[in-house]
Image 1 (tube, rainbow, N blue to C red):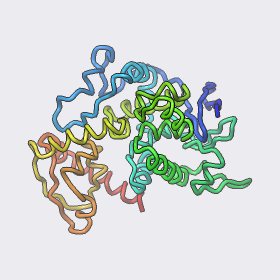
Image 2: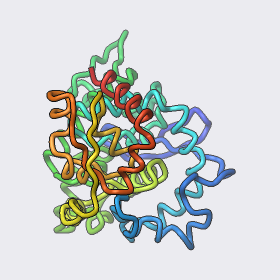
Image 3: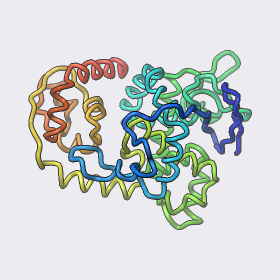
Image 4: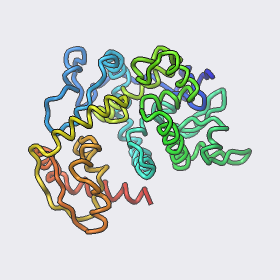
Amino acid sequence: MRKTFILFFGLLVTAAATHAGGLQAPLPADTLVKGLPADPKSGFRNLFERGNKGLNTAKLNPLAITYVQDYMQRFGPGLQRMKDWAKPQFDMMDGVLAKHGLPIELKYLAVIESRLQPFAVSWAGAVGPWQFMEGTGRDMGLRIGATIDERTDFFKSTHAAARYLNQLYRQYGDWLLVIAAYNCGPGGVQNAIRRSGSRNFWDLQYHLPEESRMHVKKFIATHYIMEGQGSVATLTQKEAANELMQQVTEADANTEVIPVSGKYHSLVIAQHLQMDKVRFDKLNPNFDKALAANGSYNLRLPADKALQFQASKPQILEQSIRLMLSMN
């Protein structure tokens, strides 16, 4: 089903979706994005190549580079500002997504769906920050009626979105296909798989509706702008498997052990140090459970990340406590 959304900023935007569709407003390109190259055409490719040990080295797929370059120039400054004003919403979503066992970077799906506007409404009836249609919202446990619509409730709709994302991931095992299906529905993705003979997004993308294809690329671009890097959520299933194999090979090379105690959380440590969560878990199996049970843990980190951790312990501890409170 194709839907057209009206942003509160006055732009008319079209989006294809079964239950959801992305809102996109133009953002002034008046400042450069912190941490990204001033001239993306000359420096962007190198930004995501391997070379800095300990850095999340998930590469940007070559087929996405041009799109992400353009998106960074057009929307990067506004999205960078969103990191400040939307911090309470992002902290809450981190807690909910983590509780459901999902990559916390999936919160950026709500950014491209609604720009985090709780009362965003499409002409077709998709509502809220996660842009649920009525039927899907009810299926995911939201109350929707004449006097109440929990699609506009940030906390409850994020739980509902997490349930739906998990449902889609059980079907596809690939986050890029999940994001496509969130936009056009599982039927649209199944049709693209059948017509292309592939389950790789980059192979089947032109068998998807155009808006769904672009929805995935918007998510990847937003992720790179917000995080300065990729994650498992921006990789195909095969790319993620290859990345994990590389990380396992490198896992024990040049690492240091730091005894820690207190209410640290693995998600916050990994995000603060810009480590892929999968690699962090390989170095520190069962970190959260073991720390909670024993009160202490021998944290293993790459040498450069160990220095970073020591310098930022108070901030990491504070953010960890906030995350754990939001998960309760």
